Length: 402
Image (cartoon, rainbow, N blue to C red):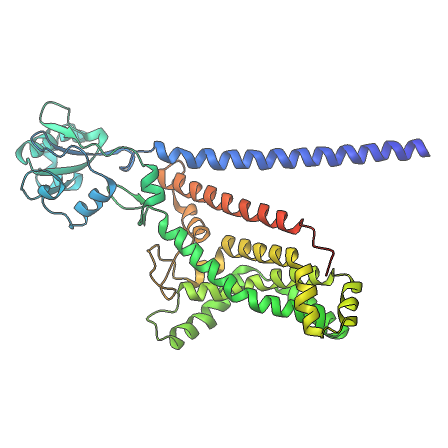
């Protein structure tokens, strides 16, 4: 019988070992895949894949950045002199414009003469900038030149202030609006949730009767199980109109609204972890404090809270992690606008909301696809730092003395 138990124990131990190994390998492979997909963004051309920009050989402007191209094609820059060239108006030309100049017969069967006609147009217009598919591009024969736009750079991604992944001819992948929106919403949510959560945790741990505690604690923990989309729907119906009318705003989908909904969602985590940490304070320490003449409140903030400070800190960090990683609720109540906000009462977009809103519609392998994976890498690093911080804080040993 003892031999059978030993064999069964070793089998169970082997199963747990294999399970842990498989889980670790799966996590490692997911991480490698995430970063390998994202890092390829910086090897992608700044102009949309399969297209290029062409100029006349007499044009002195040889290189343009994605921001320059946006200004040109949006009509904000209209003269080559503004880009370091000659003083002449910029002529924008796209492939569709060719069909208003030449008939289909002139373009030949299966558009065989299309590159020649494009060359004629560029030859006749030294001020032209042509955005064309590379397969129809004219030969480099001394008249037509390709404008150098380079690859997407680290500065464009991490320092850019515009997130416009569908812009033509060059998409813009500046993540500063997304990072700032994420931080605004998350930090404000913690600032709102922390005092209330800590207060409720103190009440449940030190002041509430056993009967009240048995009712309130399961109810609070139940809030953590409500799907985020339900919170988002409630916020869209209730909080958004309230914020709009209370602060007299044009729209109620703002960073502040997102902070309110995230604060509500973070409360169960903060309350539960902080209350458990306070509950672990030895009874002898409380009795010693009261025996020395301290009041109940003095015992709470001079004995209980200092002893449980590591657990309270962990509750705060976990609450921040919940706020930063939240997706659907924030997507529904913040306006989902990828702009640089100047106040809390403007629409914003967070990193998780951007991934959720755009990933399902982008072509696999495109620069937009790679940029979203890189956003996932950034979110992965942030949440990993938060998790490690929570683990380190929660393992700190409290002081034994009062």
